Amino acid sequence: MTSSADIQKFILGVPQIVPESRCFECRICCRFPDTEEVQIPYWSETEAAWVHDKDKAGTWFKPVPGTVSLEPKLVRCGEAGYRCPAFEDETRRCTIHSLKPLDCRLYPFVVARHPSSDERVLVMDTKCPYIQEHTGDPELAAYAAHLADYLSTPVAAAYLETNPKLAGPFWPEYASVASLPGLSGERNPPAAEDAPHPALKPWSMELKGELLAALRLCPHDFSGYTAASLLGWSDLIPVWWASIGGAFCLFSGRAGSLFMPLPPLAGRIDAGMLHEAWEILKTANQGGATSRIEGVEPSRMEPFEKAGFTMKPGESEYLYSTRDLIRLSGDRYRSQRGSINRLKKNLVGSELRTRPFRGSDAAECLRLYTRWAIRKQSRTEDRYERALVRDGLFFHRRLMLDAGALGLVGQVAEVGGRVVGYTLGGAVSDRVFCVFLEIAEPEVPGVSQFLFREFCRTQEACPEINAMGDSGLAGLHQAKMGYHPSGFARVYTAAA
Image 1 (tube, one colour):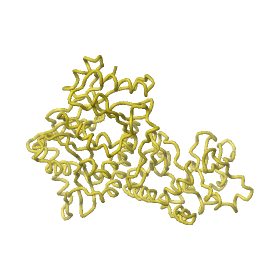
Image 2: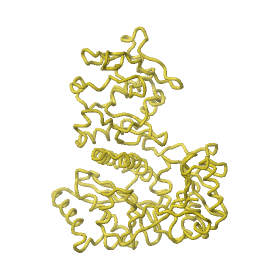
Image 3: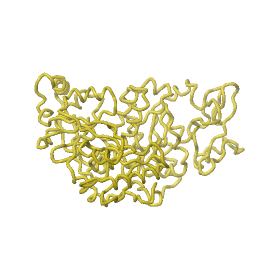
Image 4: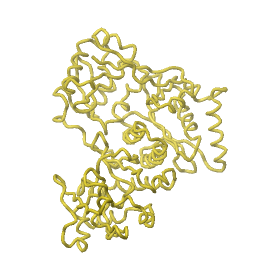
Protein backbone atom coordinates (compact mmCIF):
# COMPACT_ATOMS: atom_id res chain seq x y z
CA MET A 1 0.00 0.00 0.00
CA THR A 2 1.24 3.49 -0.85
CA SER A 3 1.68 5.68 2.23
CA SER A 4 1.18 9.45 2.46
CA ALA A 5 4.96 9.73 2.94
CA ASP A 6 5.48 7.93 -0.39
CA ILE A 7 3.08 10.32 -2.10
CA GLN A 8 4.75 13.37 -0.54
CA LYS A 9 8.17 12.15 -1.69
CA PHE A 10 6.78 11.52 -5.17
CA ILE A 11 5.20 14.98 -5.46
CA LEU A 12 8.15 16.92 -4.04
CA GLY A 13 10.47 14.94 -6.32
CA VAL A 14 8.84 16.04 -9.57
CA PRO A 15 11.67 17.34 -11.77
CA GLN A 16 11.43 20.98 -12.83
CA ILE A 17 12.53 22.45 -16.16
CA VAL A 18 11.27 26.05 -16.16
CA PRO A 19 13.67 28.27 -14.17
CA GLU A 20 12.04 29.74 -11.06
CA SER A 21 13.18 33.22 -12.08
CA ARG A 22 11.29 32.81 -15.34
CA CYS A 23 8.10 31.95 -13.49
CA PHE A 24 8.39 35.12 -11.39
CA GLU A 25 8.45 37.19 -14.60
CA CYS A 26 5.36 35.50 -16.03
CA ARG A 27 1.89 37.04 -15.87
CA ILE A 28 -0.03 33.94 -16.90
CA CYS A 29 0.19 31.31 -14.16
CA CYS A 30 -1.86 31.48 -10.95
CA ARG A 31 -4.24 34.09 -12.43
CA PHE A 32 -7.51 33.42 -14.20
CA PRO A 33 -9.95 35.51 -16.25
CA ASP A 34 -13.00 34.07 -14.50
CA THR A 35 -14.10 31.25 -12.21
CA GLU A 36 -15.82 29.05 -14.81
CA GLU A 37 -14.14 26.56 -17.19
CA VAL A 38 -10.63 27.62 -16.23
CA GLN A 39 -7.52 25.49 -15.87
CA ILE A 40 -7.21 25.81 -12.11
CA PRO A 41 -5.00 23.38 -10.17
CA TYR A 42 -6.76 20.68 -8.16
CA TRP A 43 -5.44 19.53 -4.80
CA SER A 44 -5.63 16.29 -2.89
CA GLU A 45 -6.53 16.32 0.79
CA THR A 46 -2.91 15.29 1.51
CA GLU A 47 -1.55 18.36 -0.26
CA ALA A 48 -4.07 20.68 1.37
CA ALA A 49 -2.95 19.45 4.80
CA TRP A 50 0.63 20.53 4.02
CA VAL A 51 -0.37 24.20 3.87
CA HIS A 52 -2.47 24.27 7.05
CA ASP A 53 -0.22 26.92 8.62
CA LYS A 54 -0.95 29.31 5.77
CA ASP A 55 -4.64 28.41 5.58
CA LYS A 56 -5.42 28.54 9.29
CA ALA A 57 -8.99 29.65 8.73
CA GLY A 58 -9.60 26.77 6.33
CA THR A 59 -10.95 29.10 3.64
CA TRP A 60 -8.68 28.25 0.72
CA PHE A 61 -10.47 25.19 -0.60
CA LYS A 62 -13.87 23.81 -1.42
CA PRO A 63 -14.74 20.17 -2.15
CA VAL A 64 -15.47 19.03 -5.70
CA PRO A 65 -18.83 17.19 -5.73
CA GLY A 66 -18.51 13.49 -6.52
CA THR A 67 -14.73 13.37 -5.94
CA VAL A 68 -12.19 13.61 -3.14
CA SER A 69 -10.33 16.40 -4.93
CA LEU A 70 -10.29 19.96 -3.61
CA GLU A 71 -10.67 23.12 -5.66
CA PRO A 72 -9.07 26.40 -4.57
CA LYS A 73 -11.46 29.29 -3.95
CA LEU A 74 -10.25 31.92 -6.39
CA VAL A 75 -9.78 35.43 -5.02
CA ARG A 76 -10.85 38.55 -6.89
CA CYS A 77 -7.88 40.77 -7.82
CA GLY A 78 -9.23 43.94 -9.38
CA GLU A 79 -9.82 44.13 -13.09
CA ALA A 80 -7.22 41.41 -13.72
CA GLY A 81 -9.72 38.69 -12.82
CA TYR A 82 -8.98 36.12 -10.14
CA ARG A 83 -5.95 34.54 -8.48
CA CYS A 84 -5.09 31.44 -6.51
CA PRO A 85 -5.43 32.08 -2.74
CA ALA A 86 -1.77 31.07 -2.29
CA PHE A 87 -0.56 33.70 -4.77
CA GLU A 88 0.51 37.25 -3.88
CA ASP A 89 -0.34 39.49 -6.78
CA GLU A 90 1.83 42.37 -5.52
CA THR A 91 5.07 40.36 -5.39
CA ARG A 92 4.07 37.78 -8.02
CA ARG A 93 5.19 35.07 -5.63
CA CYS A 94 3.63 31.80 -4.52
CA THR A 95 3.49 31.83 -0.70
CA ILE A 96 3.70 28.02 -0.56
CA HIS A 97 6.21 27.50 -3.36
CA SER A 98 8.07 24.66 -1.59
CA LEU A 99 4.80 22.83 -0.86
CA LYS A 100 2.84 23.54 -4.03
CA PRO A 101 0.67 20.65 -5.29
CA LEU A 102 1.53 18.25 -8.08
CA ASP A 103 -0.79 20.03 -10.52
CA CYS A 104 1.33 23.19 -10.14
CA ARG A 105 4.67 21.37 -10.15
CA LEU A 106 3.92 19.69 -13.47
CA TYR A 107 3.08 22.89 -15.33
CA PRO A 108 3.62 23.68 -18.23
CA PHE A 109 2.91 19.96 -18.52
CA VAL A 110 -0.58 18.82 -17.63
CA VAL A 111 -2.34 15.50 -17.08
CA ALA A 112 -5.50 15.44 -19.22
CA ARG A 113 -8.20 12.97 -20.16
CA HIS A 114 -8.16 11.72 -23.71
CA PRO A 115 -11.11 13.30 -25.59
CA SER A 116 -12.70 9.94 -26.49
CA SER A 117 -11.70 7.59 -23.68
CA ASP A 118 -10.82 7.35 -19.99
CA GLU A 119 -7.10 7.13 -20.74
CA ARG A 120 -4.80 9.76 -19.23
CA VAL A 121 -2.45 11.75 -21.45
CA LEU A 122 0.54 13.93 -20.57
CA VAL A 123 0.32 17.16 -22.57
CA MET A 124 2.12 20.49 -22.92
CA ASP A 125 0.20 23.73 -22.58
CA THR A 126 1.30 25.78 -25.60
CA LYS A 127 0.09 29.00 -23.93
CA CYS A 128 3.16 28.92 -21.70
CA PRO A 129 5.80 31.39 -22.99
CA TYR A 130 8.58 29.00 -22.01
CA ILE A 131 7.06 26.23 -24.15
CA GLN A 132 6.61 28.63 -27.06
CA GLU A 133 10.31 29.52 -26.94
CA HIS A 134 11.72 26.02 -26.37
CA THR A 135 9.33 23.63 -28.15
CA GLY A 136 11.96 22.43 -30.61
CA ASP A 137 14.72 21.99 -28.02
CA PRO A 138 16.00 18.42 -27.55
CA GLU A 139 16.28 19.11 -23.81
CA LEU A 140 12.54 19.77 -23.56
CA ALA A 141 11.74 16.54 -25.40
CA ALA A 142 14.09 14.56 -23.16
CA TYR A 143 12.52 16.16 -20.06
CA ALA A 144 9.02 15.29 -21.30
CA ALA A 145 10.03 11.66 -21.82
CA HIS A 146 11.53 11.52 -18.32
CA LEU A 147 8.41 13.11 -16.82
CA ALA A 148 6.18 10.58 -18.60
CA ASP A 149 8.19 7.76 -17.03
CA TYR A 150 7.99 9.44 -13.62
CA LEU A 151 4.19 9.62 -13.90
CA SER A 152 3.87 5.97 -14.95
CA THR A 153 4.96 4.54 -11.60
CA PRO A 154 2.65 2.79 -9.07
CA VAL A 155 2.90 5.70 -6.64
CA ALA A 156 1.74 8.06 -9.41
CA ALA A 157 -1.27 5.84 -10.07
CA ALA A 158 -2.04 5.81 -6.35
CA TYR A 159 -1.87 9.59 -6.20
CA LEU A 160 -4.25 9.97 -9.16
CA GLU A 161 -6.74 7.86 -7.22
CA THR A 162 -6.59 10.38 -4.39
CA ASN A 163 -6.97 13.35 -6.73
CA PRO A 164 -8.97 12.24 -9.79
CA LYS A 165 -9.68 15.83 -10.92
CA LEU A 166 -5.98 16.26 -11.67
CA ALA A 167 -6.74 14.68 -15.05
CA GLY A 168 -8.79 17.48 -16.56
CA PRO A 169 -10.31 18.23 -19.98
CA PHE A 170 -8.20 18.14 -23.14
CA TRP A 171 -8.12 21.77 -24.28
CA PRO A 172 -7.42 22.71 -27.93
CA GLU A 173 -4.13 24.43 -27.04
CA TYR A 174 -2.67 21.23 -25.58
CA ALA A 175 -0.01 19.25 -27.44
CA SER A 176 0.15 15.54 -26.58
CA VAL A 177 3.37 14.12 -25.21
CA ALA A 178 2.71 10.60 -23.88
CA SER A 179 0.01 8.22 -22.70
CA LEU A 180 -0.01 7.50 -18.97
CA PRO A 181 -1.55 4.08 -18.25
CA GLY A 182 1.95 2.74 -17.49
CA LEU A 183 3.85 0.14 -19.49
CA SER A 184 2.29 -2.95 -17.96
CA GLY A 185 -0.19 -3.32 -20.77
CA GLU A 186 -3.01 -3.78 -18.28
CA ARG A 187 -6.36 -2.37 -19.27
CA ASN A 188 -9.97 -2.81 -18.33
CA PRO A 189 -11.80 -4.72 -21.09
CA PRO A 190 -15.38 -3.69 -21.87
CA ALA A 191 -17.95 -5.45 -19.73
CA ALA A 192 -20.85 -7.39 -21.23
CA GLU A 193 -23.37 -5.13 -19.48
CA ASP A 194 -21.84 -2.13 -21.28
CA ALA A 195 -22.44 -3.58 -24.74
CA PRO A 196 -24.10 -1.06 -27.08
CA HIS A 197 -26.47 -3.83 -28.31
CA PRO A 198 -27.70 -7.08 -26.65
CA ALA A 199 -26.35 -9.16 -29.55
CA LEU A 200 -22.79 -7.96 -29.01
CA LYS A 201 -20.17 -9.53 -26.75
CA PRO A 202 -16.92 -7.92 -25.59
CA TRP A 203 -13.79 -8.92 -27.44
CA SER A 204 -11.14 -10.93 -25.60
CA MET A 205 -7.79 -12.32 -26.71
CA GLU A 206 -9.17 -15.83 -26.20
CA LEU A 207 -11.02 -15.27 -29.49
CA LYS A 208 -7.82 -14.53 -31.40
CA GLY A 209 -7.68 -17.98 -33.03
CA GLU A 210 -11.25 -17.67 -34.26
CA LEU A 211 -10.58 -14.18 -35.60
CA LEU A 212 -7.39 -15.22 -37.42
CA ALA A 213 -9.21 -18.16 -39.01
CA ALA A 214 -11.95 -15.82 -40.24
CA LEU A 215 -9.39 -13.38 -41.66
CA ARG A 216 -7.77 -16.20 -43.66
CA LEU A 217 -10.98 -17.19 -45.45
CA CYS A 218 -10.08 -14.84 -48.34
CA PRO A 219 -6.79 -13.29 -49.54
CA HIS A 220 -6.37 -9.59 -48.72
CA ASP A 221 -4.11 -6.63 -49.49
CA PHE A 222 -5.68 -4.15 -47.04
CA SER A 223 -4.06 -3.78 -43.59
CA GLY A 224 -7.45 -3.72 -41.88
CA TYR A 225 -7.64 -7.49 -42.30
CA THR A 226 -5.12 -8.09 -39.53
CA ALA A 227 -5.40 -8.55 -35.78
CA ALA A 228 -2.96 -5.68 -35.27
CA SER A 229 -5.08 -3.18 -37.15
CA LEU A 230 -8.32 -4.35 -35.56
CA LEU A 231 -7.07 -4.50 -31.98
CA GLY A 232 -4.34 -1.86 -31.95
CA TRP A 233 -6.85 0.89 -31.16
CA SER A 234 -8.68 -1.07 -28.43
CA ASP A 235 -7.25 1.15 -25.67
CA LEU A 236 -9.25 4.01 -27.15
CA ILE A 237 -12.19 2.31 -28.82
CA PRO A 238 -13.90 -0.78 -27.36
CA VAL A 239 -14.18 -3.81 -29.65
CA TRP A 240 -17.25 -6.05 -29.75
CA TRP A 241 -18.18 -9.10 -31.79
CA ALA A 242 -21.12 -11.25 -32.84
CA SER A 243 -21.72 -14.35 -34.93
CA ILE A 244 -24.20 -13.46 -37.66
CA GLY A 245 -25.30 -16.06 -40.18
CA GLY A 246 -22.14 -18.03 -39.47
CA ALA A 247 -19.93 -14.98 -40.10
CA PHE A 248 -17.52 -13.52 -37.55
CA CYS A 249 -18.54 -9.85 -37.22
CA LEU A 250 -16.56 -7.14 -35.44
CA PHE A 251 -17.96 -3.84 -34.15
CA SER A 252 -16.06 -0.85 -32.77
CA GLY A 253 -16.96 2.38 -31.01
CA ARG A 254 -19.47 3.36 -28.38
CA ALA A 255 -23.22 3.63 -28.37
CA GLY A 256 -24.16 6.44 -30.72
CA SER A 257 -21.07 5.98 -32.92
CA LEU A 258 -20.84 2.22 -33.47
CA PHE A 259 -19.45 0.97 -36.81
CA MET A 260 -18.04 -2.18 -38.37
CA PRO A 261 -14.34 -1.86 -39.25
CA LEU A 262 -14.72 -4.76 -41.70
CA PRO A 263 -17.59 -6.50 -43.46
CA PRO A 264 -18.79 -9.85 -42.06
CA LEU A 265 -15.88 -12.29 -42.24
CA ALA A 266 -17.18 -15.29 -44.17
CA GLY A 267 -16.34 -17.25 -47.30
CA ARG A 268 -19.49 -15.84 -48.84
CA ILE A 269 -21.38 -12.70 -47.80
CA ASP A 270 -25.15 -12.70 -48.28
CA ALA A 271 -27.83 -10.05 -47.96
CA GLY A 272 -29.28 -11.65 -44.81
CA MET A 273 -26.15 -11.24 -42.72
CA LEU A 274 -25.63 -7.70 -44.04
CA HIS A 275 -29.13 -6.59 -43.07
CA GLU A 276 -28.86 -8.25 -39.64
CA ALA A 277 -25.55 -6.52 -38.98
CA TRP A 278 -27.00 -3.22 -40.16
CA GLU A 279 -29.95 -3.53 -37.79
CA ILE A 280 -27.52 -3.85 -34.89
CA LEU A 281 -25.78 -0.65 -36.02
CA LYS A 282 -29.05 1.24 -36.47
CA THR A 283 -30.34 0.21 -33.06
CA ALA A 284 -27.09 1.01 -31.25
CA ASN A 285 -26.74 4.36 -33.03
CA GLN A 286 -30.43 5.17 -32.63
CA GLY A 287 -30.72 5.52 -36.37
CA GLY A 288 -27.81 7.97 -36.51
CA ALA A 289 -25.80 8.74 -39.62
CA THR A 290 -22.62 7.27 -38.08
CA SER A 291 -23.63 3.70 -39.02
CA ARG A 292 -21.24 2.26 -41.61
CA ILE A 293 -19.35 -0.85 -42.68
CA GLU A 294 -15.74 -0.07 -43.57
CA GLY A 295 -12.98 -2.01 -45.31
CA VAL A 296 -15.01 -3.52 -48.17
CA GLU A 297 -12.52 -4.64 -50.82
CA PRO A 298 -13.55 -4.30 -54.50
CA SER A 299 -13.89 -8.06 -54.90
CA ARG A 300 -16.51 -8.13 -52.10
CA MET A 301 -18.68 -5.21 -53.19
CA GLU A 302 -21.29 -7.10 -55.20
CA PRO A 303 -23.34 -8.44 -52.23
CA PHE A 304 -23.52 -4.92 -50.77
CA GLU A 305 -24.71 -3.37 -54.03
CA LYS A 306 -27.34 -6.09 -54.53
CA ALA A 307 -28.55 -5.51 -50.96
CA GLY A 308 -29.05 -1.79 -51.70
CA PHE A 309 -26.04 -0.31 -49.89
CA THR A 310 -24.32 2.84 -51.12
CA MET A 311 -20.59 2.43 -51.61
CA LYS A 312 -18.08 5.26 -51.13
CA PRO A 313 -14.29 5.04 -51.57
CA GLY A 314 -12.31 4.70 -48.35
CA GLU A 315 -8.65 5.56 -47.75
CA SER A 316 -6.36 3.65 -50.09
CA GLU A 317 -3.09 2.13 -48.91
CA TYR A 318 0.23 2.20 -50.76
CA LEU A 319 1.66 -1.06 -52.15
CA TYR A 320 5.28 -1.44 -53.23
CA SER A 321 7.52 -4.08 -54.79
CA THR A 322 9.62 -5.43 -51.93
CA ARG A 323 12.51 -5.95 -54.35
CA ASP A 324 12.41 -2.28 -55.40
CA LEU A 325 12.43 -1.07 -51.79
CA ILE A 326 15.46 -3.22 -50.97
CA ARG A 327 17.49 -2.29 -54.06
CA LEU A 328 16.54 1.42 -54.31
CA SER A 329 18.17 1.42 -57.75
CA GLY A 330 17.84 3.96 -60.56
CA ASP A 331 17.20 7.69 -60.71
CA ARG A 332 13.76 7.47 -59.17
CA TYR A 333 15.28 6.38 -55.82
CA ARG A 334 18.16 8.85 -55.90
CA SER A 335 16.71 10.89 -53.01
CA GLN A 336 16.36 7.89 -50.69
CA ARG A 337 19.89 6.64 -51.47
CA GLY A 338 21.25 10.14 -50.87
CA SER A 339 19.59 10.34 -47.44
CA ILE A 340 21.06 6.98 -46.41
CA ASN A 341 24.54 7.88 -47.68
CA ARG A 342 24.49 11.24 -45.85
CA LEU A 343 23.42 9.46 -42.67
CA LYS A 344 26.36 7.09 -42.86
CA LYS A 345 28.76 9.92 -43.68
CA ASN A 346 27.55 12.00 -40.74
CA LEU A 347 27.92 9.03 -38.41
CA VAL A 348 31.46 8.09 -39.33
CA GLY A 349 33.04 6.67 -36.20
CA SER A 350 29.67 5.73 -34.66
CA GLU A 351 28.19 2.26 -34.94
CA LEU A 352 24.95 2.31 -37.00
CA ARG A 353 22.97 -0.89 -37.01
CA THR A 354 19.52 -2.44 -36.95
CA ARG A 355 18.44 -5.37 -34.83
CA PRO A 356 15.16 -7.18 -34.07
CA PHE A 357 12.67 -5.35 -31.84
CA ARG A 358 12.33 -6.84 -28.34
CA GLY A 359 9.54 -6.35 -25.83
CA SER A 360 12.02 -4.72 -23.46
CA ASP A 361 12.52 -1.94 -26.06
CA ALA A 362 8.99 -0.59 -25.51
CA ALA A 363 9.90 2.02 -22.88
CA GLU A 364 12.79 3.49 -24.87
CA CYS A 365 10.78 3.44 -28.11
CA LEU A 366 7.91 5.29 -26.45
CA ARG A 367 10.36 7.91 -25.21
CA LEU A 368 11.48 8.30 -28.82
CA TYR A 369 7.81 8.71 -29.79
CA THR A 370 7.57 11.49 -27.22
CA ARG A 371 10.48 13.39 -28.77
CA TRP A 372 9.04 12.91 -32.24
CA ALA A 373 5.54 13.97 -31.12
CA ILE A 374 6.74 17.22 -29.56
CA ARG A 375 8.52 18.22 -32.75
CA LYS A 376 5.63 17.13 -34.95
CA GLN A 377 3.00 19.07 -33.01
CA SER A 378 5.17 22.16 -32.73
CA ARG A 379 5.16 22.43 -36.51
CA THR A 380 1.42 22.39 -37.09
CA GLU A 381 -1.67 24.14 -35.77
CA ASP A 382 -3.94 21.70 -37.58
CA ARG A 383 -6.13 20.04 -34.93
CA TYR A 384 -6.62 16.92 -37.06
CA GLU A 385 -2.86 16.36 -37.41
CA ARG A 386 -2.35 16.95 -33.71
CA ALA A 387 -5.11 14.44 -32.91
CA LEU A 388 -3.40 11.84 -35.10
CA VAL A 389 -0.19 12.30 -33.11
CA ARG A 390 -2.08 12.16 -29.81
CA ASP A 391 -3.99 8.99 -30.67
CA GLY A 392 -0.95 7.37 -32.25
CA LEU A 393 0.57 7.09 -28.78
CA PHE A 394 -1.97 4.44 -27.87
CA PHE A 395 -1.70 2.52 -31.15
CA HIS A 396 2.10 2.35 -30.97
CA ARG A 397 2.09 1.32 -27.33
CA ARG A 398 -0.49 -1.42 -27.84
CA LEU A 399 1.33 -2.91 -30.83
CA MET A 400 4.64 -2.89 -28.96
CA LEU A 401 3.22 -4.46 -25.81
CA ASP A 402 1.24 -7.13 -27.67
CA ALA A 403 3.66 -7.66 -30.58
CA GLY A 404 3.98 -11.40 -30.01
CA ALA A 405 0.26 -12.02 -29.55
CA LEU A 406 -0.54 -9.96 -32.66
CA GLY A 407 2.01 -11.75 -34.82
CA LEU A 408 4.22 -8.70 -35.33
CA VAL A 409 7.96 -8.41 -35.90
CA GLY A 410 10.05 -5.28 -35.82
CA GLN A 411 13.42 -3.64 -36.14
CA VAL A 412 15.20 -1.06 -34.01
CA ALA A 413 17.86 1.30 -35.40
CA GLU A 414 20.71 2.15 -33.04
CA VAL A 415 23.57 4.61 -33.18
CA GLY A 416 26.25 3.79 -30.64
CA GLY A 417 23.76 1.70 -28.72
CA ARG A 418 21.13 4.49 -28.57
CA VAL A 419 17.73 3.79 -30.14
CA VAL A 420 17.11 6.29 -32.97
CA GLY A 421 14.27 4.53 -34.76
CA TYR A 422 11.81 1.65 -34.55
CA THR A 423 9.34 -0.08 -36.85
CA LEU A 424 6.81 -2.91 -36.53
CA GLY A 425 4.88 -4.87 -39.10
CA GLY A 426 3.06 -8.10 -39.86
CA ALA A 427 1.71 -10.25 -42.66
CA VAL A 428 -1.59 -9.35 -44.32
CA SER A 429 -1.40 -12.42 -46.57
CA ASP A 430 1.21 -14.77 -48.01
CA ARG A 431 2.20 -12.12 -50.54
CA VAL A 432 1.66 -8.80 -48.66
CA PHE A 433 3.55 -7.62 -45.57
CA CYS A 434 2.35 -4.42 -43.84
CA VAL A 435 4.55 -1.86 -42.08
CA PHE A 436 2.20 -0.64 -39.36
CA LEU A 437 4.39 1.96 -37.71
CA GLU A 438 7.76 3.63 -37.99
CA ILE A 439 9.27 6.45 -35.94
CA ALA A 440 12.72 7.95 -36.41
CA GLU A 441 14.75 10.34 -34.25
CA PRO A 442 14.05 13.88 -35.53
CA GLU A 443 17.62 14.95 -34.80
CA VAL A 444 19.20 12.21 -36.97
CA PRO A 445 18.14 12.78 -40.62
CA GLY A 446 18.18 9.71 -42.84
CA VAL A 447 17.26 7.17 -40.17
CA SER A 448 13.74 6.74 -41.58
CA GLN A 449 14.98 5.82 -45.07
CA PHE A 450 17.70 3.54 -43.66
CA LEU A 451 15.37 1.74 -41.26
CA PHE A 452 12.63 1.28 -43.87
CA ARG A 453 15.05 -0.32 -46.33
CA GLU A 454 16.58 -2.61 -43.70
CA PHE A 455 13.15 -3.71 -42.48
CA CYS A 456 12.12 -4.54 -46.04
CA ARG A 457 15.25 -6.70 -46.33
CA THR A 458 13.89 -8.91 -43.54
CA GLN A 459 10.76 -9.54 -45.65
CA GLU A 460 12.51 -10.32 -48.93
CA ALA A 461 10.45 -13.48 -49.40
CA CYS A 462 7.20 -11.46 -49.43
CA PRO A 463 6.55 -9.91 -52.90
CA GLU A 464 4.76 -6.73 -51.74
CA ILE A 465 4.98 -4.21 -48.93
CA ASN A 466 1.89 -2.33 -47.71
CA ALA A 467 2.92 1.02 -46.17
CA MET A 468 -0.67 1.91 -45.16
CA GLY A 469 -2.43 5.17 -46.08
CA ASP A 470 -1.61 8.85 -45.75
CA SER A 471 -4.56 10.01 -43.55
CA GLY A 472 -5.23 12.73 -46.13
CA LEU A 473 -2.01 14.57 -45.23
CA ALA A 474 -0.31 16.16 -48.23
CA GLY A 475 3.22 15.78 -46.88
CA LEU A 476 2.75 12.10 -46.11
CA HIS A 477 1.19 11.53 -49.52
CA GLN A 478 4.21 13.13 -51.19
CA ALA A 479 6.65 11.03 -49.16
CA LYS A 480 4.87 7.78 -50.00
CA MET A 481 4.55 8.64 -53.65
CA GLY A 482 8.31 9.30 -53.60
CA TYR A 483 8.82 5.57 -53.12
CA HIS A 484 6.89 4.90 -56.36
CA PRO A 485 4.07 2.53 -55.40
CA SER A 486 3.36 -0.42 -57.66
CA GLY A 487 -0.33 -0.25 -56.79
CA PHE A 488 -2.89 0.51 -54.11
CA ALA A 489 -5.01 -1.50 -51.71
CA ARG A 490 -8.40 0.09 -52.28
CA VAL A 491 -11.45 -0.29 -50.05
CA TYR A 492 -14.96 1.11 -49.82
CA THR A 493 -17.35 2.08 -47.04
CA ALA A 494 -20.93 0.85 -47.15
CA ALA A 495 -23.94 2.79 -45.86
CA ALA A 496 -27.66 2.20 -46.27
